[in-house]
Length: 146
Ligand SMILES: [Zn+2]
Ligand SMILES: [Zn+2]
Image (tube, rainbow, N blue to C red; front, top):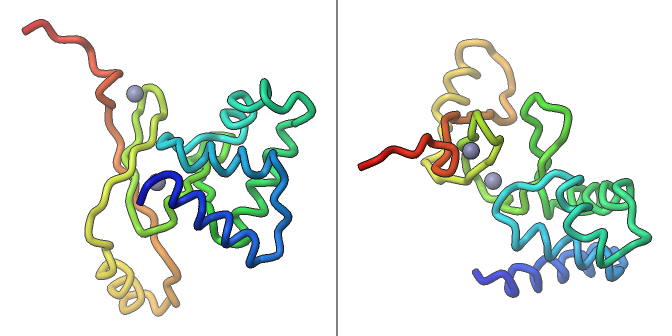
């Protein structure tokens, strides 16, 4: 799906949920869809403040909260203070760079077996699981001379 298809679909979802589409909201959504880097609210704010001088980080947060409530984005928390936002809501895993914090999507068959085994062993009603893979990304790897 292209970025503009994805944006079109997201706007459609907003409309169906009765969410008013302001120019800021539109811009935040577009930035999220274009960005493959799982931006924080602050990243989004910095990218758009030139275009919307009246916008604050709080406005960005409010928009993100609206998007999250209707299922357009997922909020990711990885122990640091700032949440990151992911508009890829399909099942996927993340590999995270230890050095720069970059998060990259990758697909791997969902580990559903882990959930059913956890249920069998503990009797919990398992709702979901999280798995992250850590390492050093391409741009943070020390440059090796060949
Ligand atoms: Zn890195
Ligand atoms: Zn992701």
